[in-house]
Image 1 (cartoon, protein in one colour):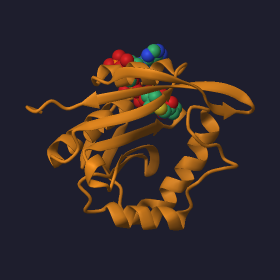
Image 2 (cartoon, helix red, strand yellow):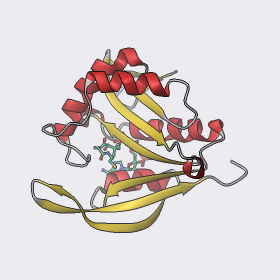
Image 3 (cartoon, helix red, strand yellow):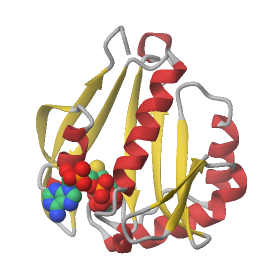
Image 4 (cartoon, helix red, strand yellow):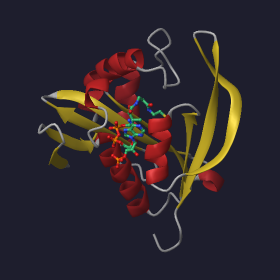
Length: 181
Ligand SMILES: CC(C)(COP(=O)(O)OP(=O)(O)OC[C@H]1O[C@@H](n2cnc3c(N)ncnc32)[C@H](O)[C@@H]1OP(=O)(O)O)[C@@H](O)C(=O)NCCC(=O)NCCS
């Protein structure tokens, strides 16, 4: 658990999510997916319910390959991130990453705090050796954030997502831990 005063002078709390956070997380996701078109879902097709979130958070509490972080400010969830591992032994060293922050809190360093927390967590677990992610090719802030943490561009998947009928390209990025990490 980490408390920090951010650039707007407010205090935030960053910690691993627990099943009791499920409703607040779902309320957060309903808000953030309306604020941005950068996610893989919108409000109409939100794939997560309170029940599914409770089930998921319960299942990953002791996982060494999947984790969900939440950031609170004024008792509200304002950001979340997720590292999602794979169960097959041949793929167990590979995880994928997702992150979002409420618009009112962009550019305050919260995305960077979450990225550091996730990468530190993954490295400490000693199972994950690489992290993959997909990002809209036109999402310059997210791409800059990922590059800052060492992710490198792998390639572009064209017409990989459609938002309101508009074709969107996605960049694939990866971070490989070296053996000394
Ligand atoms: C992408 C997102 C998570 C970034 O979160 P954030 O809290 O605003 O990020 P930070 O404040 O830590 O900034 C991270 C980096 O982004 C870059 N950045 C910030 N503002 C920027 C701007 N206006 N233009 C370009 N790059 C910018 C910088 O590299 C910055 O690092 P620095 O502050 O050390 O220079 C957030 O904008 C978001 O949730 N967007 C909507 C959902 C989304 O796009 N998620 C990613 C899906 S792949």
